[in-house]
Length: 232
Image: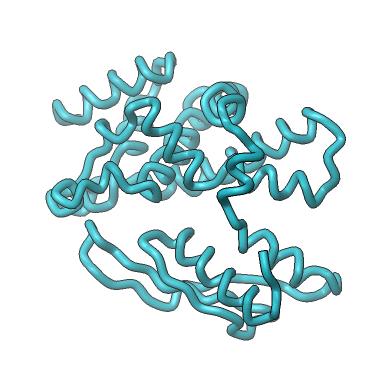
């Protein structure tokens, strides 16, 4: 591990109040693809995938235990808690952006300030905590730093969760399915753009673009939802 990576891991451990047994996990969690490509190492993308699933589960369990909210309200509240804005805000409060390993172009473009990137790194950190310390360690971090500190009502008002409302609309008949596929990407690592397509029963229903796949999926969901005559 180089000096920059070792320093970032130590600082991250102080922020988290947790010492990793496998210090390669936090290093990977802080490594953006632009840096990984320049140095021939692994980026955080696989950890992000894992952390996203764990975060969704932890938020659902937390909300279920909190009261008797109906299913539809629980879905919207969970979407608010795990949204990009909430995760990026948490990352800023913790000072995570300064620790992210970025390639030269991404660093010059101030990628560490980008909400979508901060959100991805937060999910990767959750994935690293889970692999190293287990589910309880990951859930404790999520609860203390993401769930308990969030204003759910305020977040829900600010975030139009088109993926969720489209999913609910599509599944009303009990048989239709909603999927997404990547149909294009362009630009350098520090300014990548993705285009996604929402498919209903395998048929194209809407397209959208964004600086992350998640952002592009949300845009595609909004396009499809509005074409179906919905409104949020």
